[in-house]
Length: 374
Image (cartoon, rainbow, N blue to C red; front, side):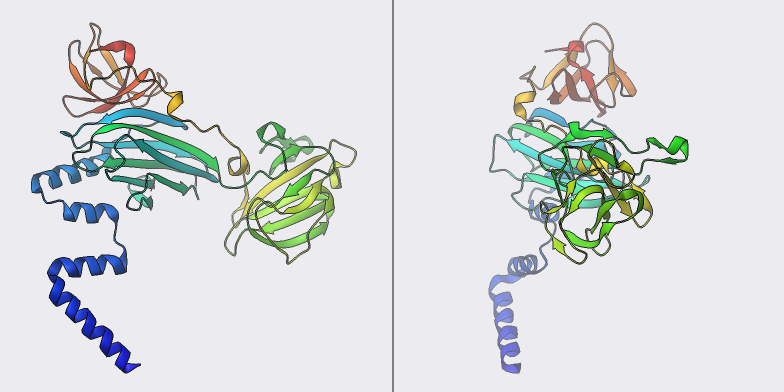
């Protein structure tokens, strides 16, 4: 054993002697797998460009542009500019944010960050790996999340950024979807004595009810107003999933299940007896009941085909009337300023009729396409 350790030590010393400092750096990188952005910045030889590229990244933290989900933006990387694309989005607990960039020049590097705001600062949730063009992160808590997208210095070519959200869990009733949910969280029960701590999903008697996540069955049987019911624990510190009013139970306490496994069948037992067959689906954390809808509700994903490109140039001018600059791509978003007639703005991206622009003073905003011209 000591001989092996000595051999490895000698080989490492030889490697350092032969490879020099760059060799040490590569060896260290291979061991600790450093942040891709930091490695790129370290290896960027042009000092002026390095400073500019890093400054662009840091500016993203003061950029408060907001976009709805799903969101898509078409644009063109401008090699003379170090531009970072930054968006704030709202997510509910149980939703997963998906970021994807399609680019014309597939050889150039992209860097994606997802962070969550705590009100004062941002906490990093996920960073893209070298060569990756996709990244996702789950919302453990509801709140505001920031997406930062930055290409390598001097990047060129067209791109499309898509931001989508998906539920954390599988849909709990086989063959069904959003339309089958007909009673929601918070609905009044027992004449106002209590509120609905879940959602009701309607389906024919006997329709399979499935495990929405991998986990362990902690309880299965017939108890009280929930009738025949199953409790699934997603992990030691995870959520407890509650399935109630089942016609039949297909698992036993202690069973391990995988996502998609059948745990029971839709019925109307318990206090649902005599009513329409449905599944009462609930989620509980250590703090109590949680609205389960974001965990299972599916939204349609968007793609490049859903977005038009209105301008091929990156330099635009404000038309005769003053243009309102907004925080997001709709009139419902806050007004953050105005641009005077004839003022030049740089086009960063296009969200159909709304343009993501940067003014001559460096302000990033959205302006309606009808207010600008080439």
